[in-house]
Amino acid sequence: MTAFAFHVRALDGAARTGVLHTTRGVIRTPAFMPVGTAGTVKGLLPEQVRAAGADIILGNAYHLMLRPGEARLRALGGLHGFMRWYGPILTDSGGFQVMSLAALRTISEEGVVFKSHIDGSMHALTPERAMALQADAIGADIVMQLDECPALPAPREVVANAMTLSLRWAKRCKAAFGERESQNLFCIVQGGVDRALRAESAQALAELGFDGYAIGGLAVGESRGAMLEAIETATLHLPVDRPRYLMGVGKPIDLVEAVARGVDMFDCVLPTRSGRHGQAWTDRGPINLKNARFADDQTPLDETLDCPASRDFSKAYLHHLVKAEELLAQSLLSWHNLAYYQNLMGRMRAAIEEGRMAAFAAGFRAGLSSG
Image 1: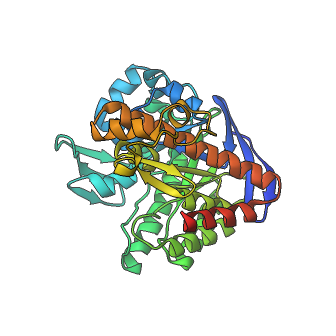
Image 2: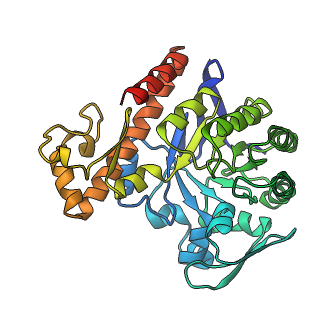
């Protein structure tokens, strides 16, 4: 079934660095995927996203099926040319957004029927339609199975039922996806923060055999410790020769901790969302450019980053733009944050190759506590 070759280049404890080869380019792992929910990484041109160091971006099937719509995407030849991003694209199946955004939804064995948060129109999403939407209409390079993602905390019975339904949907997704030469299908491990359920889900999906394995249903209300335990449990039961993707996470410290536990791929809206709200990420945590202490600060955000937004503008200027509510503030801070995240991934890849990931993680934690 595997269309894309994945090679682990170095191991350092559980952490690993590698390369995922796709028909649209190489993805260096650990990799952070900027989120282009509706066909754009908010506030940035594709060239800026690429220049920041991204090998792959994420699009969201839920948003794209509502606008511009499945038929229009097919007619326009898919998402790559539509948004002029010619590197790899991974699409979220839309399951999480259906559960969190839809005003009205009904889940059954067949799939989910929901009301659009945009105009109230009714839609149905089944495993089979999720495959057709992502693989054929959007043209994603990496397609995600449809799953049910309950909010946490939740009763064990609710989490268990969602996990087993997601397993059944994974089988249907695999059958509908079929054999493809230039696209991959990833499944999603569910089970909340229950170790037994996580292990059961991971083992069952590994037996089915997928091109990659995502860990879903985390960063939805649980503690960081519980999240890390769930990651450790899942990775313990996943194939070592396929990529592992932690969905929707997260803060830089979460990326460091998850890489140390064997995760290869990440996505999160945080870099651009923070940028739109006046925050810039650093190794010591986020700084708020709204703060008056930056009004006369002539230093850049980070002169070591190869990014104009990080290197060429003073904090005083960025503070002014934020206070004046200029759109350029949102664009520059988002650009910096993406560059920072990509630089962090690059530093972790180097640390793993040099056998010093544990020291890197310890240093990162210490930097946060002193910030």
